[in-house]
Image (cartoon, rainbow, N blue to C red; front, side, top):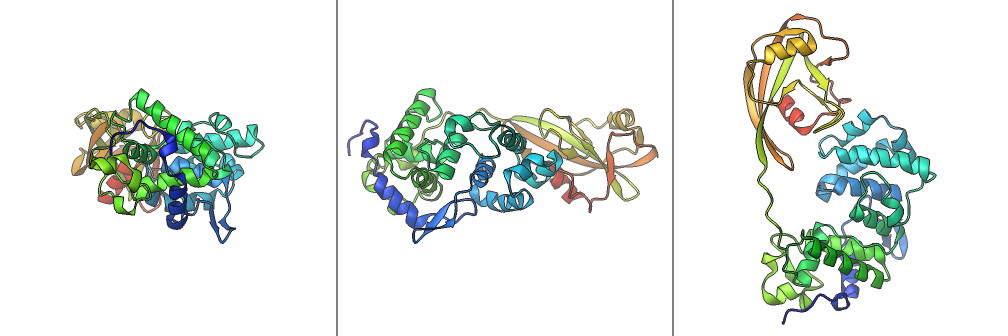
Length: 360
């Protein structure tokens, strides 16, 4: 098949919709009809929460977190009134904690500025903290059946293969082309909710980055990449910069069966989360002086316990876990808390801290 110029009119919308309605995964936040009746009615708040959680996180991972989150905060009003530490604790393990803070702030804005109703249009949704073009389109279309376009990694992969887009999908010109195709297609569909979810579902389950299932794809008869034998080559992406390697040292300081925890600053990585005192370098020679100055405690020489690696978007962090005990001193007021490791449920802890605790 010769290469086609991308034309949304070529896309088999009806085939995609039929496939999606027969093969959609049953998810607790996904509106679903059965026999013409709603099994799960559209809940804009649930859609907003699920989309916030699904940013850079696989759906299978999201589901249990979503269920716990909406059980704790059943409505947008409940979330708006919640304490941030409680929100972060329920988010614990999902990572990218800025998403939780933005969702919390968005709930407050919805209550204060939108009478407690999640906005219906992408334009209004874009006013909420942490809501970008994709999330706005997803919430508008899935929650309200509004014909708003979406482009995420799954959608970009489906379109890049179907239309044989050979330029890197993260280039501005290609992104513009992807959004234009998405807009034309959702406008042409008589079911924006199902169309957008269908493209995402196809990318997540069939048109996957590797081990594609082309024979099960409703688009394979007219897919340009499939016809050209180039599915594995697409989409093209600009090579990412190599993460910076850094070393942090965790000090597990204990006294009378309890360990010292402190809250991180309000800005920066893992902001407002709790941790065992952590030095952002590998030199522990100054640890005793640092702890004396910051906490008023004299500690023994830190002894190595274990080490592990944690990957963030831009950094590869090698953590050295050490243990030491308090020899003398009284903890400075408001500088930290003593906790037994069995009673940390109310403290939001980033994943590296949870890993360290498991190693103690």
